[in-house]
Image 1: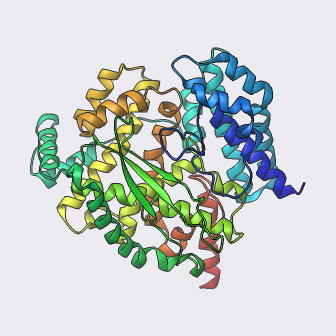
Image 2: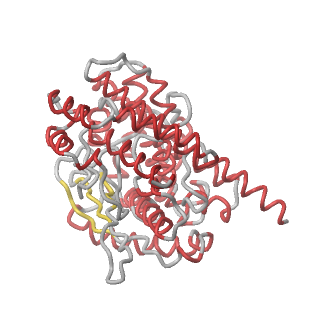
Image 3: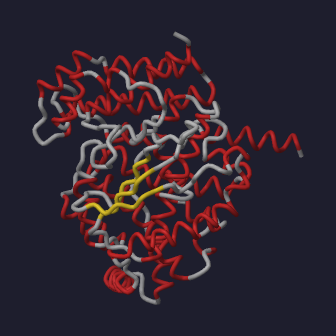
Length: 454
């Protein structure tokens, strides 16, 4: 077995091993079935960690996060698949590879190791995992509470009210209510948003990517309403369809919560986040880079709850700004877009704050929901879901919720400090798979090369 094949096999077993342990199914077409492993679009066979009969049984019973975990199924799976051994092997191979790629793999190994420790904690077989270790593993920085004051003050200015809790919340509710997306028109509105964002991406993003990526479909997506989901929506990148010549179709679906209360400006940002130039574009370009031999196998099994996920969420949360060619909220062309973007940024802050209040301060859900509604101006539906199913989840609450704010702030800062021709290729993995920490090394190298060329 070649070194590259060994690395691919180890990566697949480590990621799908921990994913299966937590009840995830990377081959599911729905976000309600996927979990840690967020894609499988290579043509490689599925590894034993997924394919063994014990894995199917464990997925069917919901893994360690099920309301009543099937311990016999868990033990049978762990007897068949050495999940911690695969994770340790991945981290060791990463250290051996070295460079930016090795640093990415080693950091991913640590994230997976924390997920293993959380599973052990949940089963009563290991100690409580420190909250700080969880957040550092997924974001590269220590946990901290959010700071919404500046965004609230700017919103109050735009809405013409005082930046106090009651008048500002009332003004936001009224603004949102006057601009709500009609549920029966989501598909029509999504198509219009995609067309607008595609044009912006063609102008402001594509010119900074290699010519070999210019023709890759960036928004081959189908919108599907879903009832009673705990998430606002789920982008499910599939990428397994092939054309007559064997080339990928780069297809995806987006399941949108039918109960979502969202304004049209916020919806435009959501489409940019999930589709173009956000997640669908990001995944499609990663698949193209892999097909072109420029990205290793690890780029085909993208993950949640990792530093790579933090960067991906950061790119997606900056996607509308990228498509419109701006770096600051005040540069957006009208006040409605500015208000919508500030509300989206406050939702990122709210996700981080929900994690902090729940796991660092031990606050009850009703108290967290109230804070998210009053201080971060979330709709009642969003405040309830984020403070509950999201924040109180033993893994998502400690590792994924902090990723949004950390990634958003990181990408916004990178876009301010680096020219588009440097930062855009790095964000879209043109120089290799990077995360919210290792991207700094890529950009330092790009800046040095640009300086020498100048």
